[in-house]
Length: 377
Image (tube, rainbow, N blue to C red; front, side, top):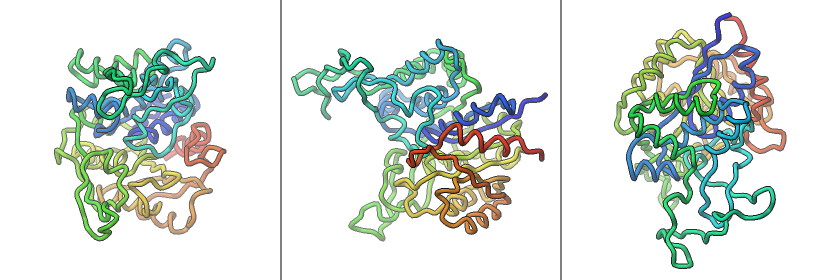
């Protein structure tokens, strides 16, 4: 039996949720999974590494690798190591629940969600040496007069990926090696082998001037803007697509967009000419998975508006299926019509975690994906 080739686009927690769900249904459907990841992150650990040394920001790539990590105890421990973040807040850092192997992260994460440290006490309640260090302050010095070390706030996996990319000179080869270390069930590729910048025209970025349109630069700043995004662009304007990603798209049976931060994780792929052309040319069917709640960057944008944004940035885009949680869709009829405008049918299913928070549950999302991805053409 030939495996079903699936390419998932995104970055951060949204892509991680999608990949974890795909992993759960991979045995039943015999899936061959490829993640194509944004490379515009400029916040947190990734932003520091990018600013200091150039190269691809590793955070979103790391998240995707960990989401696909194998189940062997050794690879699970390696995945936990990749997620370990050196303390900088005066509290020990262990693998956060939302980052742990096999556990779904928030469905709609942006730049800051990828690289913000989460702190919690170790199981035994005894703080580690790192936890006992005074927290660094903004000028790099600790309150006791010492200096914060260069590891503070960095995820181990970010440093490993950055080192591999420098050592091997090719981010695709570096990601393949990291995938071997983690026993990944699938492949992780960057959307471009060079980092990109994200810029947006935002109306009302300054609350005191609600009608003024300003240019907001940087993925993090776009992700946290309080205004309304009216236009999105990359710098450079036409980055070269990763060749291996183009090949994967052209060979795919399914292309999956979302969930995730729409302007900073999902739409950037459509602004890379080589990827956009491949998406249009691919014979694959296309699935759009919608978010469970609005984020700062998409406040005021309806679920139907999310679909319209896809068409705006790639007018030739069509879809076969739009997947949304029936508990958060206020107007199913309007959303169904928006899906039809892309050529898609709307599928409603309970895909959120049971506690009511806006996070996709990997098991529930995987269960919803099985009949969609397994349907005959």
